[in-house]
Length: 170
Image (cartoon, rainbow, N blue to C red):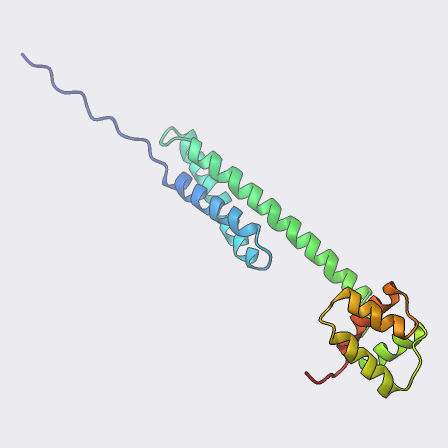
């Protein structure tokens, strides 16, 4: 007499757990990328939902609980990074709204150059600023041109930075 073969062992799969882990990992990766990280919000939120469903299924004994826990963890970390980016971005935006940067205009350049003691008409200041821009950012040449106008090296650098407000040819 032969004994009947044992019934096949069913694998306890957890589709919700796999989905949670995939969404959590992809959302976590996207959450590190500024601006594009907006895509991470729905991914990590869905990852949390599917992780919860997978964990519920595991508690009932119908599936394993490792994948849903990993999915919940990666989704939660991704969500925390998304929230951190949102807080930092909103703080920066409100700071910028309260403290806007000075306008980079030709007149602002003239005013700044004169505040450092550069003398001359607007045309002469424009010529000087365009010459500064023509240095290609070489500190030695910037300082040399500034010294010809009586500027210290830091002052030359500041005037050079504002010179980009000028409409120069070339």
